[in-house]
Length: 479
Image 1 (cartoon, rainbow, N blue to C red):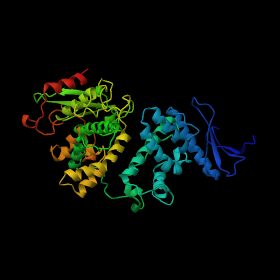
Image 2: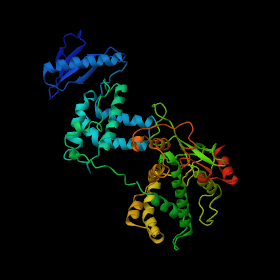
Image 3: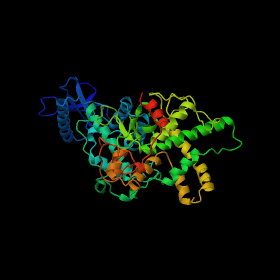
Image 4: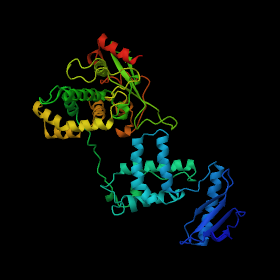
């Protein structure tokens, strides 16, 4: 007998296909199992049974044998290396390779590094089930003594998002052969009373997004961004960039009219993604159809989800867009000395919101930083000009982010346009559970109930455009 094996016993009833053994040099003295493979992968399947009991080892060896044979019948070659830590690193790398964004993967990587790997890292993937997940929640994730990185109590929504990523990983493990059984773990959000032993460890307060602000704040930012006030001691070059940034962000926040998400959905748009649509019910009116292939709600083809989202503007937006196109083409005719935009492309492949290099779109992080930098300036500007300026308004100005524009648009559709929750959900490309209860996709005829701010569009409440505006839009968007 080889000096590698301390003891070897064949498991009865397996036709000598399964054996349990001990490793001579092992200090722990655990039993291991060795199973002859029947699939195209030759050799043995081996794993530690993590028990000192011979009888327990025999029972576990039979379970491993049956799991392996089921996997082989399903065409899955179960890998020897099937521990959580090593497989999770491979999964994160595979996400990026298969087209998921690096930024989103970085967030999930943080969850695995700080939440899951410290607890599950050395555990066999087949051992992870609902019972172990509940134990993870109560003995690690929600215990500040064990989880040293906890800054505040997590919300149920945070735990639900983390659980969703864990389930996605475990499903991937089944396909790759690292796990033989599909995952079966109930939703922590729906089963929180059973899953969480001490609910004082969870932030149960109703969560109010801080960036939900009023229409008054949105209008205050728009008026500020359109103003031409600068400091007298500013250099001409600095003023040039100052006005360019302000003009860009003014047109960026006019994307309010689409009710779309700020960030990737908008910033990665090219002119080919916009289409001008002539109204069929309002003479000389038009709206814009946007097709976005970016953002967290857009999955890459092959994952069973939409590979694009479609938004429709209201009747007001074409006017804003035509002015933005004219500024990109010809520069700023209003402030001739403060021009940095002249000469930007407006072809099908050009970005609607370009960076200074013109080769890349405007950066989402830089946009958020700019809005944050504006807050004290907007507050000071509002104090001077707005007789209704209040502490509440100042707090909301400080909370304003690019994503606030979407919140305001959704709320105004419900409050001012009197549209139903389901109609608003269609227009905003979201589930009504974010607004109320359920979700419908876009209908075939969006005009009238989705394009106009008014639920019953008529000449008295519809914007019309002259030929010069129509020509600018059609020359750019219908190439």
